[in-house]
Image (tube, rainbow, N blue to C red; front, side, top):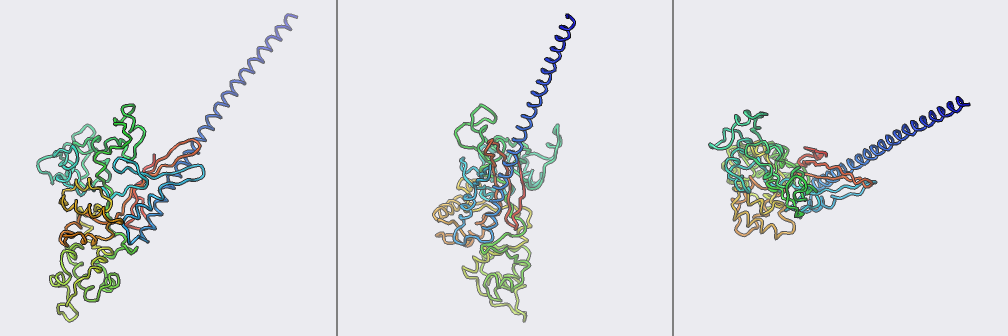
Amino acid sequence: MMRLRRRHAFATVLVLWAVALMALILTALQSSAFRQAADGREALARVRAHWAARAGVETQIARLTFNTITPDQTSALSITADLAAASRGDLPGSTFVVRHVDNGKQVDGPLDAHSRLNVNRLDVEDLMLLDSMDEATAQSIENWIRGSSSAGGLGADVGVYTGLRYPYEPREAPVRSLKELSLVQGVDPRLLFGEDANGNGLLDPAEDDADASPPADNADGQLDPGWSRFLTAVSELGLSGGYGLSGSRRLDLSVATASDIAARLSVDATQAEAIRAYASADGSTLADFVRSNLADLAASNQQTTLLTGQQANVRNLSEDQLKTLLDETYIASELRGEWLRTGRVNINTVSRETLERFAKIDPTVADTIITDRDGRSGGYVSLTDMLQIPGFTNIQLADLMAHVDVRSNVYVVTSRGRDKATGLEVEMIATLDRSVLPVVIRDLIVR
């Protein structure tokens, strides 16, 4: 009897042990299943957010394409409004928003890269106009971009970089991003990006919480982006010349035939031949056609002759013909210059504060242009619109053309996709170039 009871007790203990073991196994399996399900939900949420962010980029590409081939010929600013109108989207299970910071505040739409000064175009005199810039650092930046041979006795040389614990060499060529400037001797990232520690151009929670988390900020609800408020490195024009106000690819005058020029610009055969001959000469620029009359350019160019070999009687361009020439053509050799590939600033979208930091434009002239621009509802549709400013001359416009334009080709799209169920977000930063079609994504960052 005692043995039977012991057997029953042992069996009971064994059963209880087995039950406990099964319970532990089931708990572990359940916990694993929950974790896998949670991981699966997070993965699915990330996929939704990712493609929502990509949808924001693609929407901007579509709007840019439409505005490139069917531009508004009455307003230079309508493209900004169109891109802002397409900055938000509601998708099944997700949403996207495209924003950037302007004057410290977040606004809808992409950043017009040409509203900033391209750092690759700046020299020491320009750089010294940035807040808290010192001459040694300005010289170091110029040397990094143009090479130490441009040094004026200040700044860093190659040996400074190759002698570091983790050595590297300066680019000695145009920088590809503002973040690259952090490698330059003397550049303080806190001055370069201010509160925008991750360089995405948006006010993130960690950048608006005082000292609760890095970086240090003043928690005023506005982003202080430091020098990046005024600078860019991506507003390159490209070698294609881009598209004109007609929605067609610009005509390269240096290789175009006289008949092509006559058809595109509505000029007579003699004018077309004079334009062709002058544009194909070494060192010619579009600004020359603004600075001088066509008859004078033809007289100075030995290539401009009739079939009989006699000098042509060339009529000067009318205001409309000059406008069309600037809107619809380019000279490829201008874009192949050492530093001229970098983008001109868009006089329609650049801020007064930014233009004040560009020493190559006289402050009085800049103030006159910005004041006149702000009084126009559609801005400057053509460069020749500036000739309507009282007292503004062709010589002044010609001098400005090396630095300014009225059209932008490069936009930086910061698109955030959000999963509705979990709130998980994915951010895409795409640099879009519409100087060629289809629009090119020159750079893409996903995080």
